[in-house]
Length: 475
Image (cartoon, rainbow, N blue to C red; front, side, top):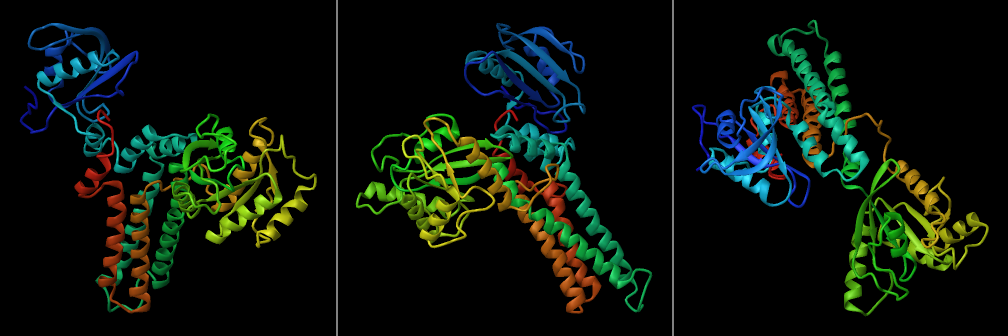
């Protein structure tokens, strides 16, 4: 039995909302019009008031057999997460109690929820917009403090308010243009042409400014890729493990140990970082090692910053030369193994020597130290290296205020870019090509639709399907 519907045709859905495995508590969530009726069948005490939590027992609806002692909390529509009647049942964790509780709810008339269906209903019932719904998933997936903060701001409506403001600005443009459309024979109406052009250019600039946050948003979401590169046995894996804080890479004194890239996402000051340990850069006849070196070069091709490692000036120069032959990219020279191979006292002079030997006097970023000496064994210099990494990352992107909304998804970037392109197309058609206002205004309508689709304010079933299929069941 399951999947009963009420006259409105909406199913009541249920799912375990906590991850599987051993734990103290598991939460089973139910949402829909049949919640109250289902509660009377599966709970021994079902006289629940809105917002009230009661200690009760969960029972099988067909036999009355007790499944578990539980705490049940009821939320009456529309004052719930989904905007529908919602029941949350907290049972003991583990594999059996949550599963039996879910089975009881399905037997009592609910159906199993699809991935993201609870949040999807919240969007459809006006409890949040699509941008806020995506922020829910980002909060769940956040692996760094910066991503958590960005998702929290988006869930609070920061990006939604920004997009709504830009949409209103484009609508205002349409309103300003209406006079020219309605009275085309007038040479100069109450709204001057200069005012409309100025407003359009301002909106375009605002859209471009928001679109420029996409690169930082990607770094915040995925971690700025920082590649550790250098010759074999240069201390790369030891440095990786020291920065990550755990032994993720195999560390030996045998050259060529790392055969593939190893990555980890860590917080490093203001920036989440995707730290990548790569195979040693050298010429080799070993087929497997060559594959690892090719993987290293692929990472180097998309790195935001490279930590070039070596324990001699010659090793560092060779590493930087190899890196810049692939692609010009910010590089920090890291003198590794200082506990066994101390660098010369004049690090600035050594840095200049390395840059010249690498064939690029500007290879090393400033004002970071020309060479950062570290020892993964003793921990010496790691703090200075983290500071240098943070300063370099700060210089790689245009600064964005901490409280500014960011575009953290490709869907956001495409929508904002499309809106900007449409506003620019309006200016080009109306001002440069002399297209009638009624025709040029089509571009403004397209810009509005792009921004509304971003928030989920128009028919976007296909967008909803793509967004919510990535959610976990129960969310």
